Image 1 (tube, helix red, strand yellow):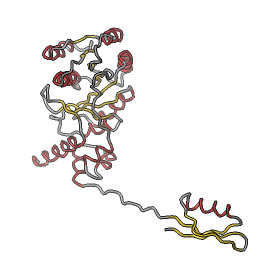
Image 2 (cartoon, helix red, strand yellow):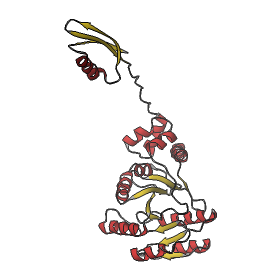
Image 3 (cartoon, one colour):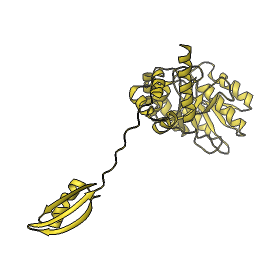
Image 4 (tube, helix red, strand yellow):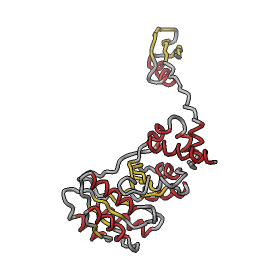
Length: 297
């Protein structure tokens, strides 16, 4: 506790000195008149300072292996990895319930958007829902045929609508608030035409946007891509190829752009190859991958 005597010509002047030095939380212990004014004894409880949580060397080594940038790695290595992932990054499930806004899946070419849509459609059908599946990819040869092969197996009709007007018309036929999954063509957020295309399609569909990004990218490229899509309105991050990429630092770096980690591509199966992204599962994957590589070396 800090204790100090303050003298001033008036109580008001003394209180001003006390507040300036000890703050509004100061405790007044005594007041007495003295020659020339008043004397007030005041004190303030010392706020205990907590030592910062030390860096966990094993976690730091793991994050270094995955190529996580230094500042982010420092924040994530101070404590249990699952807990620091949960506190530093955002995790949230995709809004797939009936009545939710349509979900639009964007990302660079080859990121796994079409397979992600097929996997989510499979999950919804297995849960007893009948989603509306739309492809807005009128650019890539065979894009509609690839997704149609999945929807036929699921007993769903694939809607082809690559223009804002046709997309809006298709969504007007949505029944009973069924979940809507919209597959987009590969887009570069650095391309002004691509950016305008995404913005126009999302506005016409009143859709929320999920970025699909493959693991194994250069972390700087991943961050720039995530920043670009976040600026275009993307809210969620779906990381694919976690089963084949050894270094996953780009996933963490992309999520740091403010996107909520939602789903993880963990295998080739349509029914079980995509799972909700959870902090403890991601931590286990990061640690296991680093340990396996260390045992092989």
